Length: 84
Image (cartoon, rainbow, N blue to C red; front, side, top):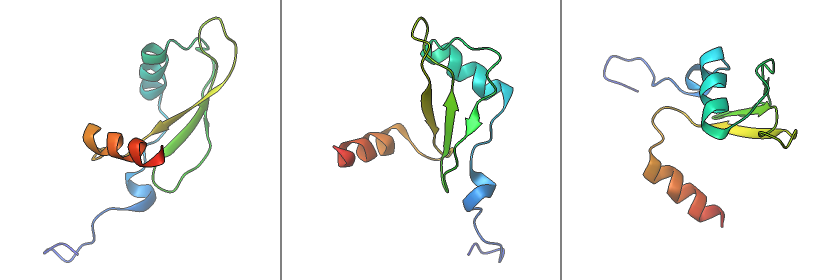
């Protein structure tokens, strides 16, 4: 609990949401084609797992994991290292 007596926002309150801006950034960053694809939220208690259309010229689908705002690059690298 914070000093104010209010709890720290956790759970769905701080989980990313699917927006047109998020989809645009993801498409641009990863070279994905389908502009009409609105993405599908696959769930996740902490992170947004988003199913979107395929990479340029490949026509497949991919899942993008969007972490919460406070996850730093260093923390993400540690998470990935632990999974190996």
